[in-house]
Length: 449
Image (cartoon, rainbow, N blue to C red; front, side):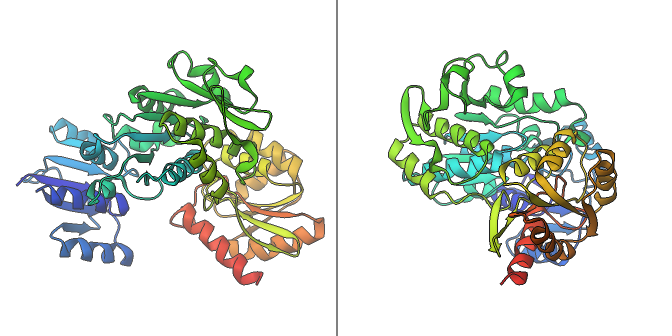
């Protein structure tokens, strides 16, 4: 029986383990961490005949080496362990690649980009499902891709949000439709250079039968056309601004694909120009897949938005509390602030990332009445606000202090919005941006009953 080793418990690792077990492999799952949540997951896997090792890193000096190693997205692709495994001739792949091997006969839509992936993915899945298709979202949202391979009924389409980490470890994934939403510096601590980061994402689009690009993204406008001369483009500013004349655009209040009016642009109830861009990419995808425009319009009209991305939590005394916890970098946080009414009270901070914060700082000056700083980045952000001459900030450290203080400041400055848009990863105080957003939601609901 061939041996497989899965690195990383969690949804994707567990699904990969179950898929390989079903296919007749002897499977071990390992995780360097050990906590009650992982212990609970391990008990379930063990009951299914899968070996689990917590607080453990794979030893490549042992006599029984695996034939294949499957890694979760959080494991760096150039880690010494994986480099050594390749030297030893052990196949190393990501969970998305494993799923592709069992689902490659089904058409895939793959969505990548620095920001905008999740909303675009969720909207595409909603449109396909409104057309009566079994088209679940997977990858960074929804199911793990291997869960779809395990399903008794195979999907009609796979709608996959794929990060640069997943592309790196999934070289053969070749979608029917590939979408690139935006491109700005991110994850450079892992990918080292902007060129390397760009090339990783470009690989997925090069593998795609049809490509769709956000034509309102400056970097993509300047760099993608030469690589992808036959791509479809989108533009919120009309057909005249479409890069090669083919794709989706907004004109006279309508979303138009090629020459056909598909849906009114204001049908999507999510705020912000960036969501109009997401709408165009979703509509272009649906049109290329042959979906009826009535189904497209129905799905868009009923689309509620995405948790943790400009998610309206509650309104208290005329003040809207909005959860944008998914804004984990400066560009996403700038988009979040751009989308709300001024003046706003901003809650920001967490585990800071490398990047250019100039645009974000400028919009803070233009649109916020006050900023409340939480997490490890609070002192560094305070220093930056001092440097740009912005005095209305306070270091409050925790979400528990930030929310009541934000309500007080909103009344003081007659602000209509309190926005959690951290511009940071969450790992200093929370397990994930979802947990951070859930905490914001819970405190708001408890405080403003």
